[in-house]
Length: 359
Image 1 (cartoon, one colour):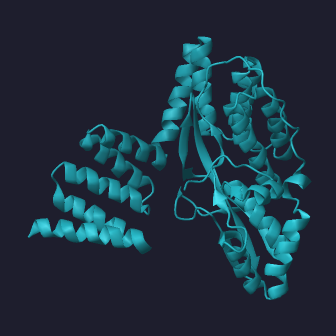
Image 2 (cartoon, rainbow, N blue to C red):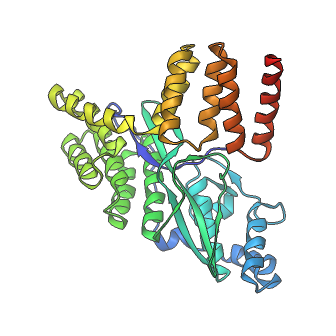
Image 3 (tube, rainbow, N blue to C red):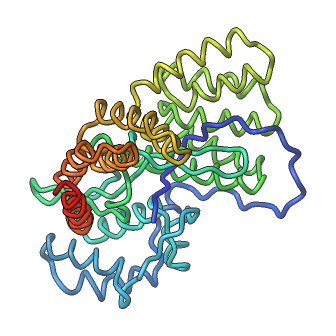
């Protein structure tokens, strides 16, 4: 599975007419997002709270409760941005909803629980004319001096930095941002505006919210508003890749090539320092059979972030295609050293096979 705690809508999509569609309910309040329904509270009381008063034991029981068949048996769904109650009713959640659910229940168990943000991650997806590069969130729980993370996608996200604790306002802003993206995909643009406004109200200092809202207003035909929101995002975070990308598209669309070129240069500078962008370039070159360029960009990604085993594995594949078996072996050995569990065993098997070629 992959996680979507969105949401930087990076690409500039064409303006489209808003189709006639069923009305969307008004956004839930922040209190409603985290509210635990009575049936869930009763089930949690019986299976977790009544079993132990030990904080550590309650945490273990909570994790079992979320995943096991006799608990909630939650299932991942990338567009399931739900309130806690909706998650309970459907047993579906994306990583944001799973985080909200875990935090609400942990607080019910009298544990110190909070959201955690991992801004610099590599999780992309594309739908129609919009590209989404996402952030990732999970639940943090502190028991005395020990900190724990409850994460539905711990083994699926490539992250550059460890998670950072965030206030509820930022976590809830993510919720409303997710709904903006989902409603945009359904062409429910005016309904999405209400969610975007709540996101900005909760966390006006978050650049991604302004950039996303700009995409929304651009798609609704409000160009002046979109430009203002993109600029606000860049005031808050001058190197924000989503806002820079959006500004390039905006000025190309409006015919101001000089400004488009200026923002393109700023975007390229930001990309040169982005290991994930270099990794994506390398993967693209590899798919198209240009293994020399693939190796070059894998090396650039590694120079910027040298502890990600997937970068080394990609480099090993490129070297093999170039007939450079010993270089491939060294890259694969590094990938194996940086990984663990089943992935480490897989790399070891590939490395053993490769070494047979050297004999």
